[in-house]
Length: 158
Ligand SMILES: CC(C)(COP(=O)(O)OP(=O)(O)OC[C@H]1O[C@@H](n2cnc3c(N)ncnc32)[C@H](O)[C@@H]1OP(=O)(O)O)[C@@H](O)C(=O)NCCC(=O)NCCS
Image (tube, rainbow, N blue to C red; front, side, top):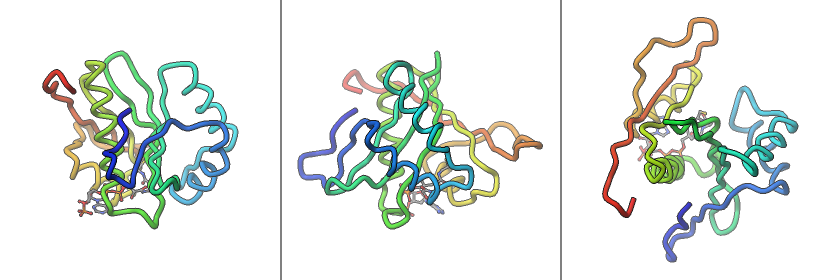
């Protein structure tokens, strides 16, 4: 994970167990299907030992958003992406996806995938702006749309 430039007010850090209360608040604030405290504890544990990651983006040291993802054999699967309501539309969601994409490219993964609730029009618009698309209709029972972003390999420094 890269740090933002030295002039930037934003930086990325890996989540730690002591962030759990903040995560619980953010989950309730940002999602209609929030992870429970226990699910968060489990995800943090997985992030410590296997192919999962949870990164927080901080603004002036205040945590303002996060991305949680798994590394599958060929893909990066986004579990959660959340930006605090006061910090939306400042490009932070894009920064988190860009950072995850750079991380995935370094591991030669071919795409980012995720599920998004079909009534979450704002998030769908956000993902489309970033180049995500869906190849299949929403899942009829669960009402989630599977979206993907193919990752073209870039120059060696990526
Ligand atoms: C979806 C979410 C992560 C976007 O984060 P963000 O930091 O506000 O997004 P960005 O500022 O990086 O947006 C980049 C571009 O995406 C598009 N976009 C972002 N949010 C949008 C919205 N609600 N409606 C339409 N377009 C949107 C815009 O084109 C935006 O650029 P602009 O602000 O210059 O017009 C944020 O709204 C959020 O946390 N929502 C609640 C949780 C959620 O739904 N997560 C995703 C499903 S798991």
